Image (cartoon, rainbow, N blue to C red; front, side):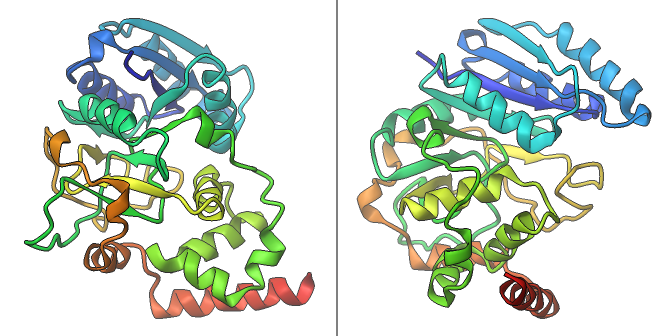
Length: 301
């Protein structure tokens, strides 16, 4: 049975339409259940756009089944995803997740379902559909690679992994005071510990960094394709967490060879990880700011 696609939408009807159109043309779409969560407007100014989004999703067709959940009150992206996926996992044991600015390629669903089957019950936390622009060594024989960082741009996971996540992060204070723990967590980008701290002090409300930290706590990795099967069209200044930037552009393809999936025993390729982390590493100035925030938190707590 194919994994369902869970789509989260808010106030960008034009982005959402592109996502739905591409998803409908992906292989296996007609054999896939689609579940859409539409958040309610946060402000009166968002009301018209949310209304347009809901008109769009009420006219969706081309999937095995379609379920729409329209929030009566605004819950925000993090709660929409956490609560939404938790409810989906009451029925399904795996799920593919998209937000309203992620446009999948034709082979996206096939790759996701193949990877969910191949990596199930292994030391893998989630499956990514996106990858940053990495340098793959000529000697690397696989179509996927492993990294100690989750991906929120077209991704998938299993019920068992999702339910292991403690969204309250009770070990945060112990973690943030450990230089070694922070260093290990940051091996896939020096922004990770800083993002977790920013969540803790209320600067951001990210579900993804907490999901990433849970993977770290369970010593599990995320599988990435060596080239992307999605495009993020939200890096135009309209999104919640991504500014207008070309930093995350990546080559996109329509097919991943499942016969060349990297087995988990291969582990992390150091050359690929070094290239991978460059996309996410903070600038010197940002690292200084983050360090000051860290010191202030430790002093105050």
